[in-house]
Amino acid sequence: MSALDRFLGGSPIQVILRLIVISFVVGVILAWLGVSPHDIFGGLERFVRRIWAMGFDAFDEIWRYFALGAVVVIPIFVLVRLLNIGRGRG
Image (cartoon, rainbow, N blue to C red; front, side, top):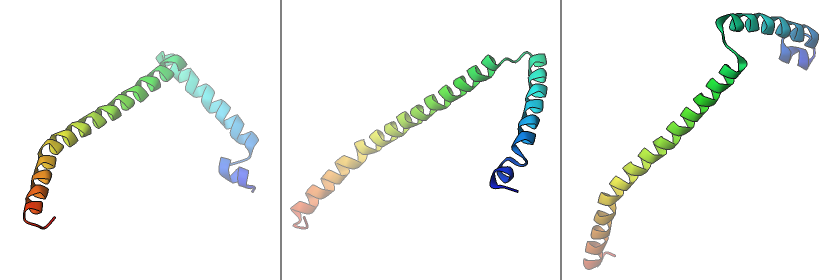
């Protein structure tokens, strides 16, 4: 058995014929359910757009947390550094 046969799970001709038959059966079932290729690709596009939007919304929330923390941490850091310089430990 060649590497290609092992990768495909059989000879290329058998696999192609099997895929044609399965594609036809699935196509008949989806047509019976009223689903078109346009619906599938449109749904996939909407899914990717939602994931994309959620990702950037997450970055927006992370930025807000960072800014909120920085408003407290940076002044304290500067104050501590100034106090250390005043004590001669700078």
